[in-house]
Length: 413
Image (cartoon, rainbow, N blue to C red):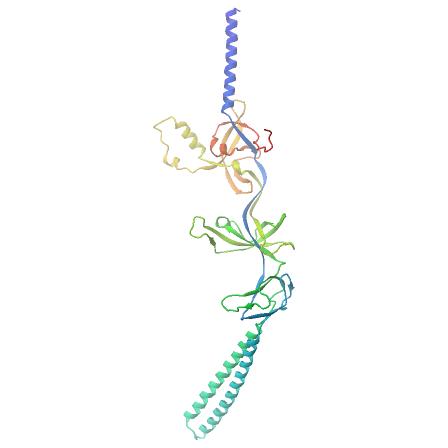
């Protein structure tokens, strides 16, 4: 072999090596760094989050039905009382006087009725003997009826006076704990039929519930009997369970008429085995388990994104160089679909590429989507970075799987 041929062969080998080196590095330069995870099988739980306050299931406000000054208070906040137990008393002097007056009026009415009855009977006998006219008898009959009506009015007045007098003494309407006392001895209670002047509140602390506000977009998923996880701010290390017992049918609006308007619905959640430490008014956070799917495929939430259907993207790419190409109007109007990017081996035998795959999702959990169709168990999918998943990746892109970068606050400078 001549020296010239040897030089040509060496140069060709070097050139091929250089070209291969740059080709490999070009592919590496075009690849995108991504993180991945595998499709798993397990349980997916959809939850609705809400917050609210602890309150007793049953509580009764003991209020003054009549006006009067408090002259005796037999209980204090925190006391346990039984139904019918004496609680407080108002000054009853004027109400006792009203009772005495009503009794005297009733006695006078009874006397008048007796006299009117005698007169009526007498006039009846006389008219039978035709000693008086019928008109005289009718007059006696009317006076008797008036006296009878007056007596019934006096009886009603006495009943009302006795009722007002009895209302100056208050008894426990139920067995429970005194959770609130609003009056002290010497203070005035303003009794009214139109507004409550609450003296104290009695509650059964054995049955407690959480009253929460649920957004209008979430309340449609909540149903009676749904189980809940309850975290009480004052007892953060313990998770409690509860059951949805009541869902309001009318909304509660806040910031009405403004851009910050919020529409919520009140939902009551019964606490199961409430601890002795909780008190009415404590704050609580609630997760309502509205749906549970077991033994299903699921992927991380961040791996699911929206893209136009794959066939439309491919057509756009193929027609992008043609200035005269126009997509079909129906194709342009196609809505984006849910997709994930599945990692597959590159045709070149080195590295990985992504395959855009349309999926059908079910319920959403805390950190995962249920997958109904489009994926198989152990498929490897792209989970990040968010920028690439949301808009950077396209079908067929070369990628390199890396670990997610973590910020190290103690990194040496």
